[in-house]
Image 1: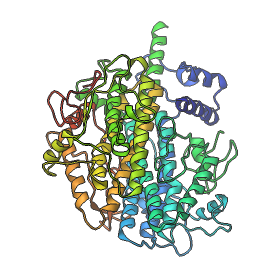
Image 2: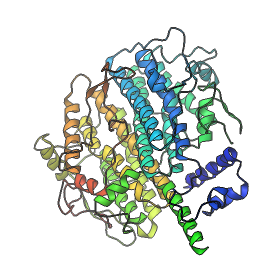
Image 3: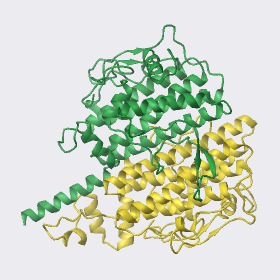
Image 4: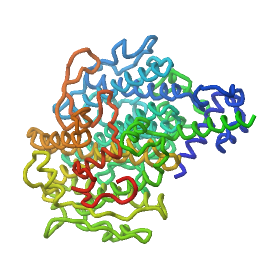
Amino acid sequence: MDTVNELIRKAVSRRRFLAGAGTAAAVAFLDGCDNSSKTTTGNGGSTNPPPSDIPDNDVLNFALNLEYLEAEFYLYATTGQGLSASDAGSGAGTTKVPAGIAPVPWASSGLAQYANEIAQDEVNHVRFLQKAISGNKGTPVPRPDIDLTFFAPLAVAAGITSTPAFNPFTSPQAFLIGAFVFEDVGVTAYHGAAPLLTNTTILGAAAGILGVEAYHAAAIRSLLVSTAAAANDQTYVNIANKVSALRGMLGGGNETTLSSKTIVAADTTNAIAFSRTTDQVLHIVYGAGGGAGLSKGGFFPGGLNGTIKATAS
Amino acid sequence: MANQETRRLDDIISNRRAMMALGGAALAGLALSGVSHAQATITDTDVLNFALNLEYLEAQFYSLAAFGVTIDKQPTPIPIAVNGGTAGTVTVKPGFTKVPFSNSLIADYAAETAIEEGRHVTFLQGALGKSAVSMPNIDLYNSFNTLANVAGIGPAFDPFDKDADFLIGAYIFEDVGVTAYHGAAGSLTSKDNLGAAAGILAVEAYHAGLIRTTINQIDAGSGALASLTQKISATRSKLANPSGTPVDDVGLTSAGVSLNGSATSAMATTFVDADANSVAFSRTPNQILQIVTGGSANHQGVFFPNGLNGTIK
């Protein structure tokens, strides 16, 4: 049960990075006795909401960036096009896609229907988060620049190919690998971000989105396994596990090697799903390790939009 | 000054509590179910013991299905009588044997799920320590027959008969687990408990996604199993919401989606059990009790013929 404390430590660490608050404040926060200026300047009888470490809307906008990425991937896979202009938001960035992008040539309508379901869910999450942020008196960030050609160098980094040629839109199996890149990450990201939220309604929604991301992850993982079994060919399961290893290297471990006996990604002692800090998630989607100060790259060539953008660790 | 200090302390406490209060929508629901958070009558122990009862049920079902024995008879036994309590019994059909799986993948899935639900039991017992309740009486025989009648599936149903029946039996439980953790988490005050609950919620959603995907895969072209899931989902929704609204359960079917357009343009498999925003459903403990006891007024019946152990019963 060290994960939650670790989360808070990371959150404090990031707050220091974002707001330049002192170490004393961070320590005080961990002790449950926040001495930061936010509280000491409070006006006594105020009925304002209690001070928040990271504003809920910052966390929601962080999640919104990830949903933009997922929605773009699944929409291009299913329709050959990305989010509508209205869904992408005013001032949206551009999405770079492989040359000759077209819907995945599905071998059967069955797999296409899974992709359609996930695509619609991710579009719904984009719309839901935009509304939640607006409803919470915030401004939803527009879609940042997204690079869906990053799968190719990612595949090289993972040791899947020797040249940057991997394209997840070219076959159903490649699509499953592309989806695999994202789905377990979504679970760990929402698990890590949810405790940072203070508004109980928003928290409830985040928990519900966490659940949906886990449904998706289970479908992708089990489809990889059952497809491999049917073809008596573990090639794509092995590729998925190379992706998993790379994610683990960038994102602080938190991975379960995929097999028919390990569909669920969770710790092996308590069967509790993994959790990642925003820093760990940023390292994965930016496709680079290292420590603090990473603010763009990989799937987000211009970085995320919003305040949670640069790694603090 | 003292007042200011007190108010500040209240702010801090409420902030920290709120930060950990995953599943905010559940708070309202808890009030409706008569175990109001505002009355401070519900403790983390109450909630975790409620969850432990449900995990006993799931763990026994999967352990019997995969291994043919109850969890206390596994090679590494999981205790069912704790803290000096007396364990209930598990009722199974005469001449019970484990599921004679013909598909090795489904056998693997059953074993993995059995192991993970067992870990949830062990984890919750450990988290509860001296407060953990023993296993109540559990019925895995008459219960399924009763539910089959209520759902209009037929006069009897044996989830241990073959692969497909096992999957349908698992279907009955898994989405319920997701909604139960989603609904219960909001009343947890300990950050450790809350982080754990969110992580278990995700694992239950992985299980649910796996079961729903697998049912859909083996049902391809038939629709017979999908029809059963629709009946089960409708029954769960009706038990949780006796008035008929809202409908908080979606069975497996093909539904039209509009993706990035404005009109229905594709068909999607509803392998995710979620609302119109693609947020997983949440249920109050009372709604969960209604489901697992078949709508019994005193919450004794179906899977828990003598009710649950603990205070939420």
